[in-house]
Figure 1: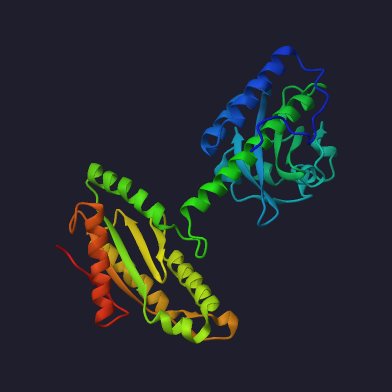
Figure 2: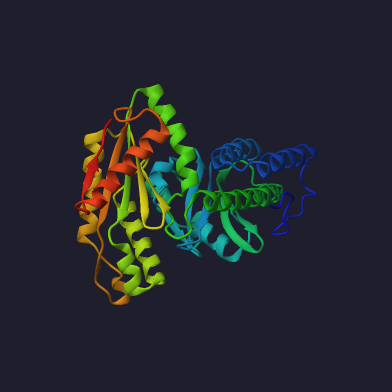
Length: 349
C-alpha cells in the first residue's frame, strides 16, 4: 500500500502559506495511516472543513460495478436526501471532472452548460460556485471532492484542494485494498458467503452479546440432499455452480444481521442473531420453501431441483456455549438426513 503523495495531478503549491502546507502534511499523515472507513471519513470531514470553509462539500466515490459516482460523505448536506443519486461519468460538473481527470473551478454555475440542478432540487440548496477535483490513483479515477460555494475562490483554493485530493485518493485506495484482503480472509471463494473462520470467531462475540443483553440467537445447519447425484450427473464444475446458486437462495432470505456460511462441501450454516426458536423455525422454513420453488442450473439448459435437510438450535434455550449450539444443530440436521430429508428438525436439551 502506498503511503506518500501521488503523481496524479499535483498542482503548483508555491502559492500556499506555510500553515496551509503544514495542515496538508498533517492531513496526509492522518489519512494514509487510516484503514477504517468511518475513521477515515471522519478525519477527512474535520480537516477539509477547517482547510476550506464552504456552504457544503462532498466526497463522491466511483462505483466500479456501475461506473457511476455516489455520495459517500457530505458536510451540511443531508446524505439521506442524496444517497440514491448516481452521476454517470461526464454527467454534471463532478461527472466531467471524474471522466477527464481534470480539476475544475466554476465561478458561476448558471453559465455552466453541464451543471446539474438535481442535488439543489432535492436539498433546497442554491449552488453558485463549485471547485471540484478528481481522486486519482494509478491513473484510475476513484471519485471526486466537490466544494460548493467556497468562501475562498483565490488562486490558492485549487492547489490546496488538489493536495487534499491526492492524499485522499491514496487513503481510499489503501482502504479498498484492506477491505479486499479482509474479505478474502473471511469469505468463501466459491459462494461469497462467510467461511468457517468467520463463523467461529463471530459466534464467540454473538454469544457474549446475547449473554449480556439476555437475548437469544439461533443457528441452522443445512445440508443439500443427494448432492452427490448432482455431481455424478452434471460434473464437478456444474456442481460448484449449483452450490453458488443455493448460496444465492440463502442470501435472498436473510436480512442483516443474519448471515450465511459456506461450512464445507454441500453444507451451509445460517446464523440468526436475536431470533428465538419459533422465529428461527419460520426462517428455516422460508429457506426450505424457497429452495423447493427454485430450479437450478437453468443457465446450462438443465432443470435441477435441489432440496436440503435442516437442523436448528437456539441459545441459551438449548445450549449455553459455542460447541453445544453447533453440535445440537448438526445432530438435528443428520437426524433429518437419516429419515425424511427435505425437512427441518430442532433438538433441545
